[in-house]
Every structure is written in structure tokens, then in C-alpha cells.
Length: 82
Length: 428
Image (spheres, rainbow over the protein chains, first blue to last red):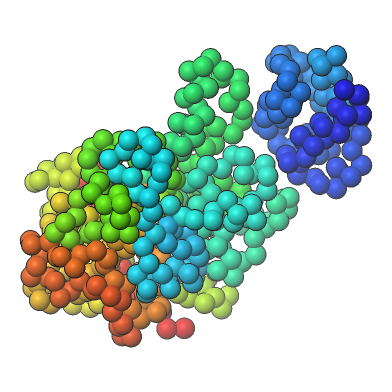
């Protein structure tokens, strides 16, 4: 799976939780999930669970805590699936 | 105290097994449409009762009403209750705040919206299986808000930006009526200008299983679902489990008139009590003294005479308690069997909506006031022998009553709890 494919899939998983839909139009690796996309912080655990299901991986709590940006998620998932 | 102490209904929303929305519900009530259906899952699970009342077409409405992230955290009682609350809100003339509008808070508007049983569908389908499998971390963030007692009112507070008291009451099958009376008290005492009040109950085998095991559910009409809910009938054999939601938008008369709102009805009075499991009362049976006292107190609170009551919307579930209830109405209203006002059971069409029952049935009361009719009580052509003397008061087809002005609604619940509310037609 290429980095671009992972990126696209990550954005699709995050999309339903996003309060600021216009921020999605300019989403890139530096986009902060909580601050830029205005995702409710409680829902981060659901996003991580959706990553696990979509990519068939397991994400440790410490790794999950380090996910702040879309790029963080893409790198974490990339390392797990390779 | 609010200025006049008067509280009116300026909005209504309803989701029931025989109709969604007040216009469709009013038609269904007038036509005597049963919303009871055979539920294959209950047959598969070997329930004695294999019929139930479940609102239809809800997923489609929910997808229009709610965002994807909201839907993930909304079980059936949340969906029913939130749809009814939004409908009551817009019926009252208010626009729904935008999903991401952070500015629209109103400190004078609250919600009291309860359930009898709560989020047992979430508990049975997700919480217990995942915890027992050692997979707690897979529960995610949406479980607590679906199983916490106040879950549904909390959801509605966010959907509609409410800033006054937001809470969920619970008094078993009395919950919906109790919420309406509590909201009426709160506005009357000047602590809120507007309150969304009512009840909601989900549709789930986990909610109904305990009742089935108690053998209080209908089990002889599994092949004829529309005949299964038989309040006041000689052949009644238990209640049919129902689900859905009803919400009233209550408002002080000053607020309603100040903004030129259309008024559906006035809440004249209400009362809440408990029979204390004494004098024949128990966890599951009402103390008739408590029932009669509750009805009398509501009439006193309304400042009217019993003779002013034009119609009765009973609790009337289709268990052995129906004859005692009818007799309690006669005694509380100081009338004779021949002069008992028309008495009807909405449960004959939609089943027993538990915590939502009193709220859905209160909506029915106000629709009957507006439409000038008393709906039929289905499936009791064979009136129970103990209440034969009252037979003329039971409508088997909708009874047109253009002068219908005042209707009384009671709800009783496990725990020997009672509620009674009185609604009066409002001529705008």
C-alpha cells in the first residue's frame, strides 16, 4: 500500500468526525486533527479503532497518543502495514 | 413564579409504531390504525410474545436529521427521542441550530426527557459482549453516552443548544407523563421559559426480555399482531411491548404570546405520587388509593371540577389491572358508570411504549383536542366482564366530539408510581 493510498484512506476515516468541513478541502499531512479539523477529542479513540479495522493492524495506546496530525497517522499506519 | 403561572404547548414531535410526525399520527389515531407487527427475531429467540410496536422508516429519517458522527453514538431510544425533539422544536417555530454553529445557546430553554429502561440495546449488543471477551479497549468513546441514564437529554442539549436544566427522569412506565409535569412545574415556577419534555424508549429484545419472562406480555395473538393489544377486553392477556418517543415543547404563556406562537393546548394541571407498595400496591401493581389521589390532585391543581373532564386517556395496558383502573377513574371523578366520560387506550394501537408511553399518549391527547375527537380503543368489543357497566364510555370507532375541551391523561409505573396531567384545548 502506497503512502498516498494510506493518506486517502485516513482522510476518509476521519471525515465523519470532522466539524470543520472546509478545513477538509485543504487537508494535508500537517493538518492537525483536533485543532484544524475540530474533531471532538473524545472521538480520537474511535478514529484509532477505525484505523485498526480498515488496515487490519493493532495500535498501542502510546502510539495512539502520539497521533496529532494526519501525517502522524499516515506514518504510524505505514510502519505497521509494511 | 412566572407572571401568569400558565404553561402552554407550542410544539409537538412524535415517533410511534403507527405513524411518524403529528399529522400522520393524528390521521392514524382517527382511523384506528394498529402499529403492532410480528417480529421474527422474537420468534427466533423463543419469546412468548412475538409481536411488538416499532416505529418504521427511522433509519432514513435519522440519516436526514443527524450527522455521521452523531449517528454513531445514537441507539434506538436516542434516535426516536432526538427526532421527536427536533420536530417539536421546529413545530414551535424555531430553526434548528447548525451542526457547527457555536453561538446559539439559550439559557432559558431546557429539557426533561427520560426513558423507562435506557440503553439496553447498546448494553446487550456491544458493552457486555466486548467486555466479556476481554476487549474493553474496542468499546470506543460512544458507549457511555448511550448507556448513561441522561444520555438522550444530553444528546438533545447538544443538537439544540439548550442552556437551562437538562436531565432525564425515570419512573418506569410513568416516565413520559412525569417529564411533562416536571417541565410544567419548572416553567410555572419561573425557572425556565421553554422546556422540551417527554419520553423515549428503544426497541430491543433486551428491553423486552424481562417482561416476557414475567409473563405480563401478550402471547396469544402472535399470528394476529393487530389484535394483540387488547386493553379493557375480556380476552386481554398482557401488554404488547412498544417503542418510540413523544416530545412536547412547553412554554410560559407570556413567552408564547410575546412571540406570537401558535398554541396547541394549555397544561391546566398535573400531579405525581407513589402508592408506597401499600393497600394492594406492590412493585408491579398500583395501590388504588394512590391512583385516585393522584387523579384528584391533578384536578385540584388544574382548578377545575371533575365534571369538566370531557375524555380520559387511560394508562390501560391490557393486563389484569385495567378493570381496577377504570373503577379508580369512576371513583376519582365522582361519577357513576353511566356518566363516565369516554375512556380510551392509545396502547391498543401502538402497544405499551414504557418510558415513552405517557409522552406519545399526551401528544395523542392534544391531537384529539385539536381535532375534536376521541380515538377508538381497539380490540375490546368483548369488554371485560368487570367493566361491562362502563361499556358505553368505550369508543370502538373514533368518536367525533367537536366540543372536546378538556382531557385527562394518567400514567402508572412499576414501583407503584403515578402521574396525571390535564390538557385543555386552546382556541388561537
